[in-house]
Image (cartoon, rainbow, N blue to C red; front, side):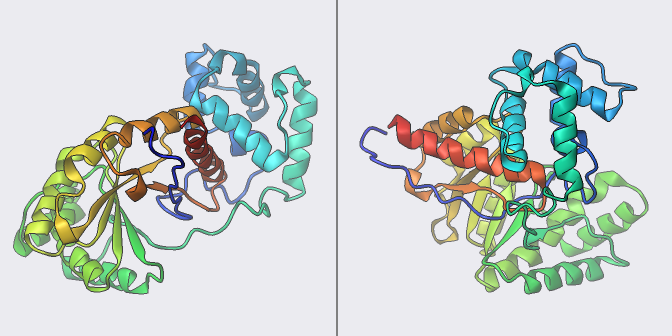
Length: 320
């Protein structure tokens, strides 16, 4: 890393799925306190069952000092700064005064009209669509890909056990899935991915694949489609240690198929942990080929995470 004078990692302006996409926000708890923060609050000894939104918000603010160094604490302050222009430590404020001030901004629709919130382009491929038949399912998804106006399609296979299958068995698996057999889901999706990858490649789109911690399944899928010569240019995003393994073992092995590496903000990340993640990946993967998956979206939580992602990249530049 010493020879690098500056790290220039492009940050995608849309990728992945928005979270906490609340169309109607009436108070700060709905906007700022998500499931990750509630879990942290429980670890701090607070039990939120039966609490009002105000009581949950008050308990969270009261426990911020116990959350130092955690991703949820950094995310909470990022959200306060981004949406409410509050950069100081709110633990010293009167909680009722703080609550009323935040509620007033929400009532004035300052949040819903915030410039950080933009509609995410519809290029996230939803693999759980229902249709009357397997053929119609394929047709609907091919139509979706045909409608994509950007240069990539996002695909989440983090919960798929990829299987080599044929059209007949994939179709039978879909019939079973419609009858309520959830275990058939991976097989029909595995079969469905073949014509979709073929179409993505034909249109010269890139395929951005989120793997989660699902390395083995992703490896099987990529190897199979590379063998069949239908693998589009693929950017693989993964979680935690899986990302390091993807970068060191999987990417760059398929020539013209172009399997590359990308990284995302993960639950619990801080700007510092993102910087450390980048430096670790750079030991096994060319930093100039790395891309960060961010999101300009109508999800408030995602917009704040997007900022932390950018700050983590900037932090790496300051450390080298």
